[in-house]
Length: 281
Image (spheres, rainbow, N blue to C red):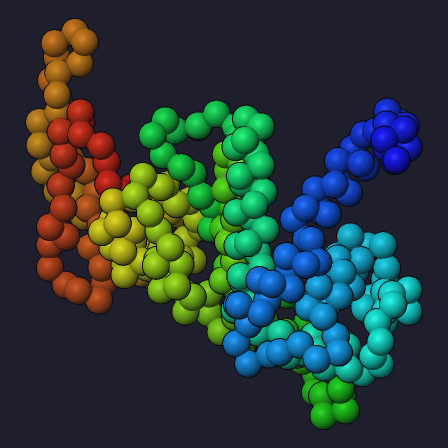
């Protein structure tokens, strides 16, 4: 019935048609409702559907509407704007995290199916970038905050970027805007898998996190934070001969936590072996 119409749109605006089709698949209302019923904790559905909230926020995120109130006026929701804001306020951080994981998994399957992933930058490793995202301070519209010089901080999160697929594959949200990003690293460590290479700035250069990555047979490339981990030279094992038959050895830098005095206990292995960890200075 609509084949001819869709063909005309696809010819004149193919990118728009592809984006619309992708959003319809990843954020299908019926599928979202089924997932929400199984994944939500304290929150439940009465008048306002979870998919309706996703639709409102999608309008704001994509800058179709300036804010939630403007998106609400254009939507058909049988509830007041106050009820909508209360529903948004009640969305649990675990639900937001689960939604990101759900859509990222579906998008990854599509990218893999059509061969859209980039070639490996480092053969044998899946590159993942970890970075923090601090939400901007909100306006001081609440009456108890109007006399405060500091604007309230809504929260922050750690975000994982999948390099090969170009996706934000995971998020670790925190409702406390004054918490340190390092407080979320235990959750991140639980998701580390073998043959991954985690790349991050020095703010996540924490001994326990690096050790957790190594225990899971993964690798890391993280800028050295001198306040967390010191290092010292240790002897290296003799390296394997190069194609010309020459052998060489040189000292390497071994990580040594500041909170644990004593030798680092690590050394460079044979160059033919696969490195377990790496620290970038």
